[in-house]
Image (tube, rainbow, N blue to C red; front, side, top):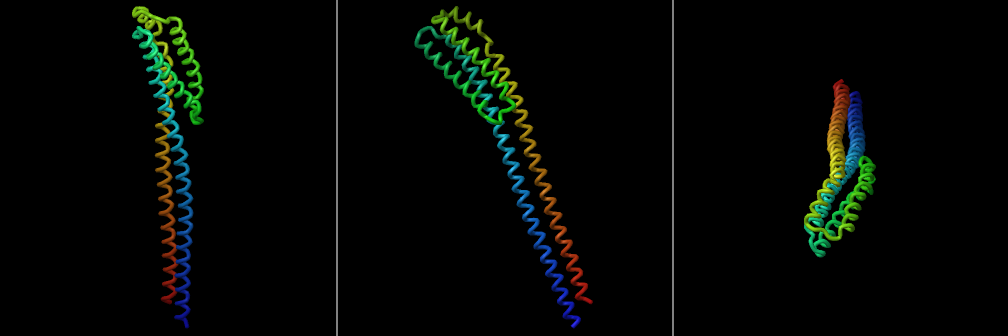
Length: 225
């Protein structure tokens, strides 16, 4: 009779140990899934911010390039365009580059994540339009230019866009610094969360094994009595 009781107690302890392990595994699984979901959500949100900063930086670089190209086409108009056909060609290229430059600035303005650059970009857009209109006014004023007049006008207008280009460069540097800092933060945060999750899983597994060992030890002690 005592032996039967011991076997019954052993079975109860074993079932209790099994239930404990299953329960802890279930808790560990739910907690892990929640942690992974949270990690993934935060990672994706930060990744979107990183991508947005990268796009703004690309638009700023393109704006610098298009403004330089527009300035070069202006020089071509006044120093190379000796006939009407050539002048129309270079003027068309000038307007094309100006449109591309303004489109780059508008893309940044329309980007809701571009808070860092928005105020400066709006001011640059106004300043650059003043300079571009100066170029256009000079083209209307000088309908035809000799080579000498063109060279003199080139010297007169030299460096008009330099201040805008420098400001674009500075803004782009600031955006790039923010971009690289955020990129590093995303990487570090992900690694920290991963290590925390791994430590949590290890602790839960060790705790489950500890409880199982205690229950099994008690069951064995009861069965041996």
